[in-house]
Length: 148
Image (cartoon, rainbow, N blue to C red; front, side, top):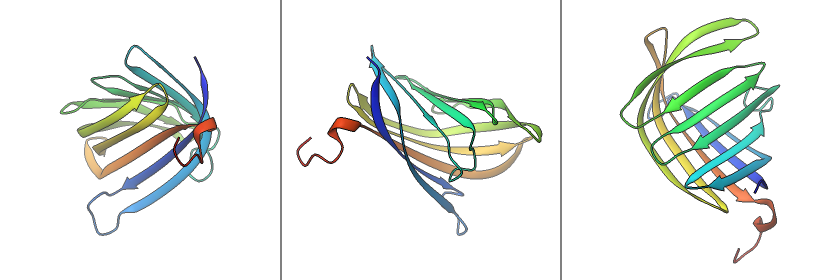
């Protein structure tokens, strides 16, 4: 069953570097969970620099797939210990990007939960930065309850 949820995203670019940059963003979205797999989707905003793009995330037991569709188009597959390349398309052109997933922590279920991914991003085979993002999904009706 599709649920209305609050999605909180904390993204750190340049993780463990002196000039790391952090973006925090909260939005509403949709979520469902079935057979050990969680799926969520939300609209990006100007805060993330991806306005006009819908992001969908599929959290499976062994990997996390992030699809972006709209002004920015990409499909990133995060799997611990695996390197993966993907095409990052923008209105200004496209680039081949790569991700080397260091660690995935997931704690999700029917009512939402949390996913954290630590990865190294490269562009055209040159390392750009080590990044980390954490997404927390909370059912709209449970938000703000002291003993939810």
